[in-house]
Image 1 (spheres, rainbow, N blue to C red):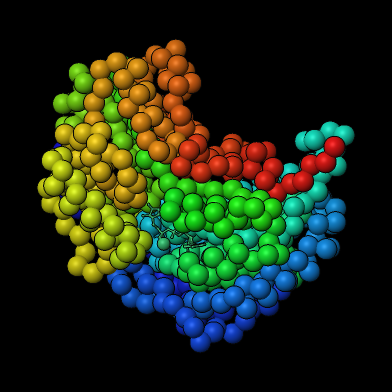
Image 2: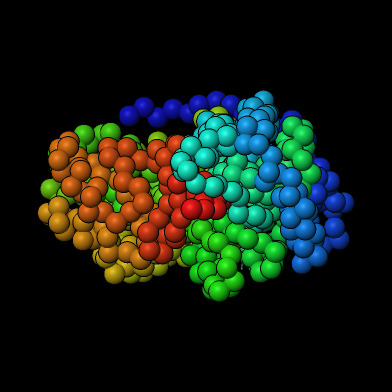
Length: 478
Ligand code: NAI
Ligand code: MG
């Protein structure tokens, strides 16, 4: 393999970022409040801007604005609502470069991912659900279809604009109004979405955005005038939300963590499989709820797979997320970096063997974890059971398909799985028996606005994307 360096290819940072931001409530921006939190660029630890922390009063004002706007938005003809969603999608496309740069600066993900995945996919979700807005009654022939009401939506930091799009687009298409609470480390692009909503003339109060951390989220969950809560994030917080919503009559969908398995058979196209596995865990620093973090290898090919993985992680470029050649960017926050370091330590202490790039150089400032994997992992090891949410893969083996199924399903999660084999019948049989919301065959992390995504067991419930993704936002009578 040739050892060469690429010259730096940095994306511009010429984007406007204010010193501080307020909330979007009832179509107007509030002045930045006294109570603020800093947003750090995790690639250099510099403060990018400050977000206001919404207290119960501001959350209440946002819910009130959404309630008021619901009166007219919910009865607007679907084709009219659809036009607004189309306009938002177009505007996301027009402002794509700016949004991608902001996503990368605020969250640490490589520019090639925010440019090629996050932002175009966010636009696609608005395009896709724009198409549903005037067709809802055809999806349920002979039945009355209406919106649910005010939706409180709480999203994480791993795909900031994309998660906002996943939640906001179906809600608005169905005639609901929204209070969105982005994650505390990555609120910039959600706030830009608020600007876009204003640019396209979305009626005031239809989309409200309040920033803040867990307490702001909890205030939104607990607000009595919210009809539906949609949450994506950690299983711990998801369970707490499920408890506080229980018995209130609020609707709830949860998209939580994962410990998704790959199963690779000896008959698979090995190089393609290794590349898919590499993409499936190192993509976006492993900050992916459906990251393929457990790899089950048919015993006879363990050696070859280990060697190929080892070779491949040497060539993954870690560093400046704004560089167009970077594969693996910065870990989103110091907190997440510490979580990952904890798992790396536990993995070694429990007896697994760590494989990491032999050079392993990372920039001096910022939060970095080079791509790595563990071999000699036992099912009882912490790194085989718990979500790491970092670029860390746990490699295990199996002898028979039924053993592979048993071990892959032996987890409290059930979000996604990958199967790598040349045999169609085997692939279908595995897909049938794997307890996961999505099973990818000879591919991984393939998402589409038209196809539903979501989990089983502790990975949550409800689906996002596709026709299924709009159901939680609809009341269907008769
Ligand atoms: P988190 O669940 O605390 O944060 C997600 C969102 O929930 C953020 O907007 C946060 O402000 C909000 N939130 C926090 N506490 C809340 C509460 N009590 N009520 C309402 N909203 C609340 O996740 P965190 O702490 O950022 O990450 C911890 C771990 O969670 C990660 O290491 C990872 O394993 C997992 N995670 C999974 C995600 C997924 O996509 N499934 C996304 C982010 C984290
Ligand atoms: Mg948290």
